[in-house]
Length: 163
Image: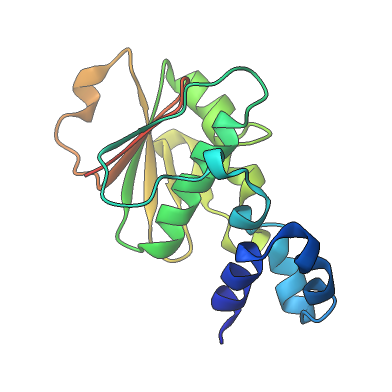
């Protein structure tokens, strides 16, 4: 069983049964736990199963909408090196401040060894495996014409779309 499979199995255990297993993990696996969102997230913060086009999280302050969205984007980027993700905020400043640099943004939730490089002048995040995300402003909808994206995330209320 590889590291990813072990962590997925651990996440599937009831909370009471996890502690003895945690003591058996290798140092590399323990390091990864902090960034294994599926282990810590509430069920309603995880994307729905199946083939869907839109995921809406309609919840109040403190629910973890930004974190859930950032973790979804991080998972898409991790699992798909060819991913081209559109990150859409009300303004470019909001997209950058919340979705990229915020306390629950992509830079904060990513493990240091898989953190994307952020190029503000290009409005681009690039992951080590080749996946990319681009920042857009909802105030400039025409800027979304032309670029090909495999996924999109819109800031507040949290929405994500998979094509």
